[in-house]
Length: 282
Image (cartoon, rainbow, N blue to C red; front, side, top):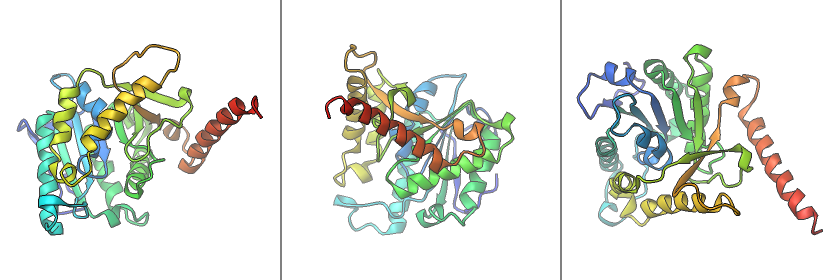
């Protein structure tokens, strides 16, 4: 495949030819940064782990050059940090036995610029080559600008495909803003119980971020456990760990529905639910 960045790469842990590796994809994760997939799309990774009938393909959109750094990484240049983060993402692909790992190597500024078509073009090519059944990307209500940009670009790329080439499910997942605010009927519950060892191994690969003082490994596992416990107040837990996702398929079924309007409707539903409960005590 031809990428818009000359430094983009396709890494295939088991050595399969890239075209064949992409073609076997059933679950596709598209994240902004190295480690986003492991935190937000773990459900897809676990669904495919050790299976011969499923394969997870990961896509990281940015180059990692602007990553925060501390400790032993404090004096690393942007270029050195970029190399570290790329290597960490390759290592995670090996640990998680991904079918393929694509690193598009775009600067964050390019990804966040709506006038730039490079990322959208790359994602359209990936979607045509992989034809996944399930796509995981960022929750578009996330508070991280690059995450929101990636979610919007994924949606644009999916809308450019003929309907018969689109996936069965498209999920917007939690990282910098969780989805507990959604009304329960709007939450997609992804059971990720029983794979704590795999989750910990994947998170631990990203030493450049964790050792710098951001314990993503602990925070992500804690959130998953909290979502399982606090989802239903009057029922015993049905899962040990849950991640929540937002169903993005309505945006593909209705091409006239804007992302802004969709999120506004969900926020209005949340507001109405809160107001109704509190009104009895006014």
